[in-house]
Length: 223
Image (cartoon, rainbow, N blue to C red; front, side, top):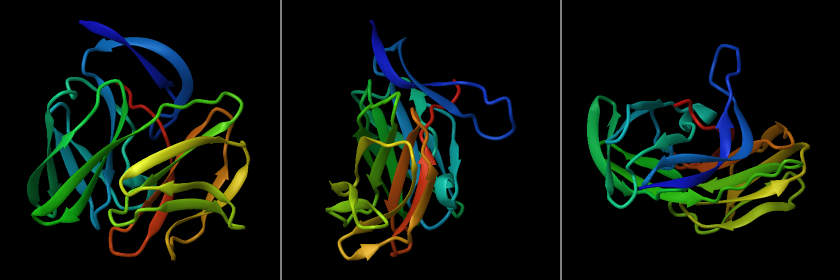
């Protein structure tokens, strides 16, 4: 049985060296039942490689957006435990997550050594042709109330629980923001100039105990 999955993005070739860019647009695509989008995230202190049981391995670094993968179109993920093999420092640890079909899934890997864990959650699909869409992902496990605010203190997205994400449409303009949890804040983050129709995410995590943040473009990988 096949169903229609309404996606928020489609991939176009950039025609240049480096990662593929994504052109956000609404479209309908027939995909197998149980298919969803999965983004892998490294919230550990070092480089990791993640091998899902449904796809090839992905290596994630530690410098800003190197910590996050694009969204992968992933078949057969719904309705079962999904097994991940996480390799760090020469040691491989299995972890399991539950993912949703017809959804944008985020999988955050954290911990070290044999104490690796994974948290899976979803972010809603949102696209605005005349505005930018900004997501805020709170990847700090003991932060119940994450906030991203402009440098002047005005909140952009607030009340984001641990291991959850929220998004909203914002004006396509230049912005400097600060991500925080309670009294702890990451350094100011320059988002550059957001583009109309662009999809962006601000990430808050604390891989070594202190909060850090970075911005990433939200794309879907080539199939």
